[in-house]
Length: 348
Image 1 (cartoon, rainbow, N blue to C red):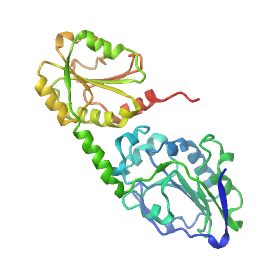
Image 2: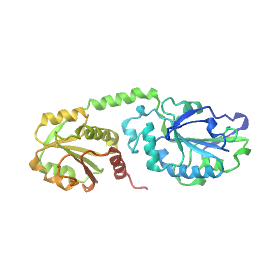
Image 3: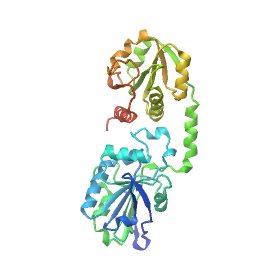
């Protein structure tokens, strides 16, 4: 454990703030005056370390409430500055609307406030990475500044300096505890230039489409690989092409560095039109053009929803076995969740 104790004269007061919560209400300092202690956790949706402590934060929110105190979370990232592959361990990014989705999916039992646009509170407190936790006592003087808990014992309250500080007579402290923080660097508007440059490079990647035979398709889909495979089967005339292909492009850019294999298979014969549509979607995946008479290797992955052959999306495991498939317009959030599950490595 790395920590320091500072004397009472170095106490700092809670800065003024006024932040929007995911319930669409604004919250400021005065709104918490009735509570003995105020715990603040700076949390990022895309941050793997933040996610590790989801359950611990929810447990601590209940324990704070039992002592007439409150624990809140604050999201501090300028979401447009987050690189696509930095979201590869999260089903959502860090926008305000995605904060609402994360809170619903993870059943958050605490207030979740947005500080991503101006990062006003994060700057005032001096937060540079997430997760980062603070406790302010009844006088709103700082008594804890540091990590949430032990990354190797994420569900252990006894291993949490944050909780231990809260649990032991916060009103009698003549010092505050500070521990080292480990996590993901906060993204600011100054990081937008790099993110835009990465997106520009992605947009300039060459799009290739190759003719496929029945045998070639069977090999790519059934040959064992180290990572799962996502396969989108479509035709030029499908009404859902624009939404589906843009969603595929986003998914590919997010999960490509984690090794997800992504294939698009256009059923038809018009190579130029197929390439044109894929270029508009910036889909530099492995793209095939397959004549309809060679469709049979794909039939076993079709979800059999309705009478249409295309479009449909299928997620396969490493051995080519079907995990899930849908026809028509697909839900990107649902597939991100399933992809993260499929990419998950076993705990050591």
